[in-house]
Image (cartoon, rainbow, N blue to C red; front, side):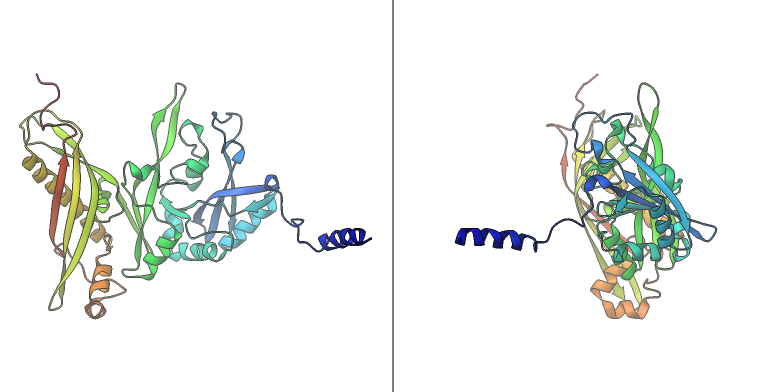
Amino acid sequence: MKTYFNFLLIIGLTTLLAGCWDITEPQRMYYINAVGVDYENDEYIVYLQVINFADVAKSIQPSASVAPAEVGRATGKTIEEAIYKLYRSSDQEIFWGHMRYMIFSEQAMENEHIIPVIDTFIRFRDTRYQIWVYCTKNPVEDILLVTPILRNSLSSSKLSNPINPTEQETFIEPKDLRDVVIGLNEPSYEVTIPYVSIKDDWETDEEQVEETYFSGVGVLSKDGFKGFVQDTAARGSQWMHNYTNRGEITFQLNTGDQEELTVSIEKIHVDVEPLVKQEVVTFEVKLRINATINGFKGRVTEQELKELIVKEVKKEIQETYKEGLKLDVDIYRLSEYLYRDNVKVWKKLEKDGKIPLSEDSISKIDVDVAKINPGRKTFTETIKK
């Protein structure tokens, strides 16, 4: 009798246990991988990239008959209105927890249009701060419809996971929502966002294949968009932060044969020191790097290589800095270095978070090539004529 009573008690208590009755089954949801934002005719244009997870965990080649993603489009006076319109056209519940990146058009970043968009996604409980942020001049929809090389899953594309490609080359530092918010809230109230374009550098036996490409940076401030620094003009930024894993420089050797040499730059450590004289502030940049020689013709000494490397790195840093000045941009965030070092002087000189900068504000660039790895035992040709 006691056993029977205990059995009934257990059965009765199980009815009080919480279950998963109100949880939507995974196969009955659409998963957002990316969001694109444009602005036209006083309205936001929102693109939602819904990813197909059918092939994500497969080691075999994904099926060519299955679309890797679909992109929905809607407009609205606010970003939320456009998203709700997309809800109405969706067959299933939309899940935001796997969202990986956002990409903005040039128009979406102008006149503070981007600020309410960032605020919306930061406040939404299903999204995270580590959502990568990009900008582009290309049509946003075209970027979202680019399929990764070998038709891999979009969850492994460079825009979804920019950390992986930076192990081989860190041309542009990736930025997430957290970095953008910090950059806009602290001097100089400007932040660089990776600029993405489309190139057809790859091909199959049937066609040219388009792929996304990091082409430079777009500069965003609290007051709106400042402009783009692209291609060779943006090269100096990779030497001005410790995030860079590896970069490259190409220069001409002093051999008289107009031979070009490409050198890999690694283990970068940069330090910026503000110097205050009366009410004039200048900055000294101290850079420590290692270099690896990839191959060359002719004879050259280690000292000659060091001098050429130092010259080229200084040149790229100065060129990018000058491009920033053309846009009235503190591209290396020099104002923040002064803010951290001497806030009293910063308060006297700052205007809208920035101190006055000129071409002479960087008074010295000291590049120390700590080590050169020739890739073999000597600095001579492998194959001699």
